Amino acid sequence: MEALGIDIGGSGMKGAIVNTETGVLKTERFRIPTPSSRKPKKMSKVFKEIVDHFDYSGPVGCGFPGIVKHGVCKDHGNLNDSWVDVNVEKLFSEVAKQPVTVINDADAAGYAVMNYGIGKGKTGFVLMITIGTGLGSGAFYNGKLLPNFELGRIPYKKFKKIEHWASNFSKERDGLSYKKWGKRFNVFLELVEEITCPDFIILGGGVSKDFDDFKDYITIETPVEPANLGNHAGIIGAACAVLP
Ligand code: BGC
Image 1 (cartoon, rainbow, N blue to C red):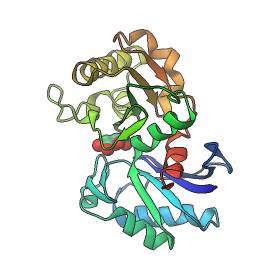
Image 2: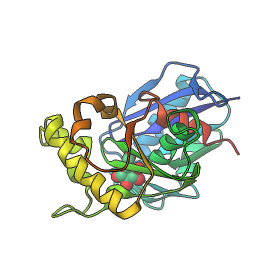
Image 3: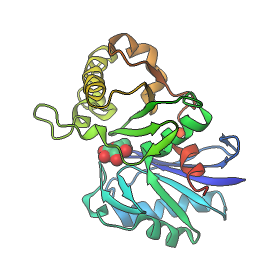
Image 4: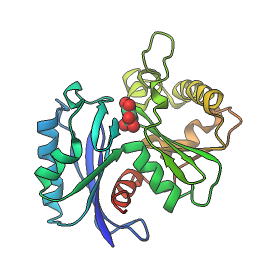
């Protein structure tokens, strides 16, 4: 079976058709920058452009960068606050003219990694942390997803959410080297470890491919490894999330 997976981020909206048995991309990834307003109307237009690009009809799965409960956005994360209470599944299904299933983006990425990547077969409590505009988290207990775990929202010093200090966006905003940012990110991981006692942590998002540049600054006891699905985990997980 195949499905179209669309991964929405603060800076880009990306899609590809995925073989849902193997978790392998069947097409090139297609990316359009996220509209700068980050508002529902403009973003749903881009969503439609992505679906149209693939000339696709069939199930569509989408990873959304905020809290999603039963298809409805309950927190907008780093998107515009007009997303709150929008039925994202309904909106995207209408523009795409086919059924769209929407889940949190880090939950989607984690789903991919747990089923087709380094998390496969891992039992106990596994956390997927995605490092991007925000800090996303997907939580899995014995392989089963506990949706909408929001570890990037831990308050830290003057920051309402620690993601405003330790995400990749913060790294770029503050012009940090991997050494300086790696130490910040380690503070985040220390809090995560203290609060949740995970057995294993998997890192995703663009910077996870540079893991060798910051791994020396990660000092927590929990084993930490980068995801091994390139930058495609979000798309793969979104596509596979449409399966019953
Ligand atoms: C949101 C999360 C999301 C993460 C990564 C955060 O701002 O609160 O729901 O998973 O960004 O996109």
